Image: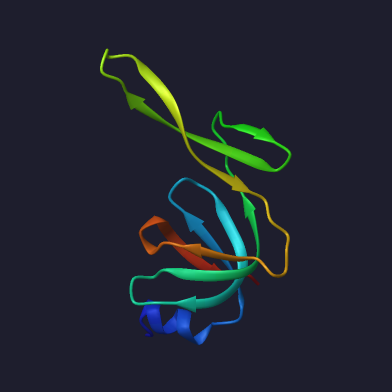
Length: 105
């Protein structure tokens, strides 16, 4: 049985589905992987599983609740994820947010 890192290295330049902890699935061609399971994908698309986030024109705004000094909760915009379909676009995904990676068949 091959170890997971070797399996990924053997499948470089193949199409994969990367499932991340927030439920999103990023599909693209695996360019690189390192010992921390950080990956680079090219020609990728994102499919977001939304739970109340605002969606406008392919952009998903992700918010994070933060506490204030007076005890009230406010929402701070943390990042925006865009649906890309550009052959020249490369996406870095940190290994700590990856649940699993599977080959696209």
